[in-house]
Length: 516
Ligand code: GAP
Image (cartoon, rainbow, N blue to C red; front, side):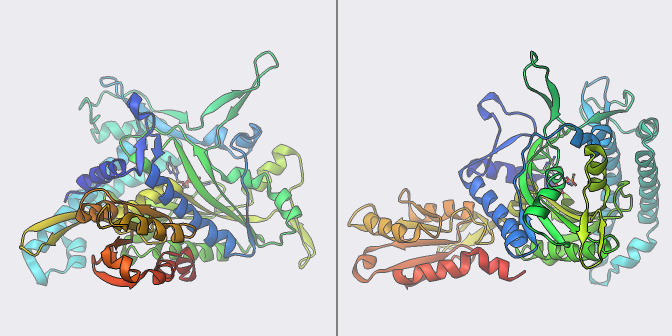
């Protein structure tokens, strides 16, 4: 299946099964804003719980906060967001569409990558088992030429972005004859900087109003609470402050579903350390966060680090954790060594001392910071993309049936157990309700009596329910049920009394947390 088709299927699946809906759907949606449905909110909450418990509960020296979305406007001046949180935008004069200049150039870079991969695939087929891929990549003239062209373009773009040279960005687009995908023309305006923060007014005009911003990251709410938390929690460096919350960015986006949104959620942790110790902690958090991702069981080879070669002026190390999405390796999480930039800036702008007295060193300093920052929605998309499977099932009469199954880690699944009476009579629905009433305090259970058992299994497969149990006439006699496992589709007979223990062992978040 083509990668784009997989992506389209994910979007359709998320809508059909109550995971994600376009916001304001009955008004034809609102660009890059989405709502989570009945199954989506459960999955999203489980992802957040996995993050929170692994960061806050498992670490004695990390505590959580929940800061407000509205913050003093000077905070965004101090953090650099007012002056530098910009995207370079360009308009096509014919289609009147607006694009990010760097994204247009990145798409051109991706074309070179595609050409290289196509040549490699062709050669693989041609040479079969004898094929030496590494040698081919190093020596094939066409591959070498395309790589060279790619590198030249990449270097030119990086330099233009670093130098903030908007004219050069435009020149690159013209030189490489990059056309607007809508109009097909090269009739471009100049490139302009566009700030990504949403703003609004606080207070009525009669009293005098203030321009304030919707926070573009949750991190600043942590920095400005550094002293409050450190003092009231008697925290000792090294320690961390974690937060999950909404962030807003006026992104120029094109059909990226929940990968890039205008309203989204972040899970961020700022870890405060002694100056000079930050790079050791950076390495520590890189390793821990990668383990967190890999523990979900979606395949070791599907993750990689992408170290930033161009660092923001306040950072002395930065990396992304990337996942192999159906549309290529993309960033899911960022880990940044932010030095003492943010605390020092707030110290300067607020005019208040923000320092830590280290009793072991007998000195005061502004702590350095390692940040781990992951988008809840992007993580949601990663999980659904990784879990989505289409399978063909051979039936007894040799015909082939198809099923779509979300192979979610059981701890993240929206529904842990579906309880299905075989028929809607003979006391079976009552027995099913009785089972739910015993288990519902610990597990999210769903009752389903509509349609054939086969159809009910398919519905549960599609939302990733790891266990289905069927209540039949035998259940009334001996208190046993049939349990069916989502991934293997195998079934076995079990006493009802054993269900709670099985569900706990397989679906409990603590099983996942213990693997960290
Ligand atoms: N405080 C640092 C920070 O915000 P970032 O790289 O801009 O860093 C961190 O964002 C993470 O937030 C990203 O790795 C991504 O998962 C998520 N994210 C950023 N912008 C997003 C958007 N427009 N839509 C969805 N998720 C986004």
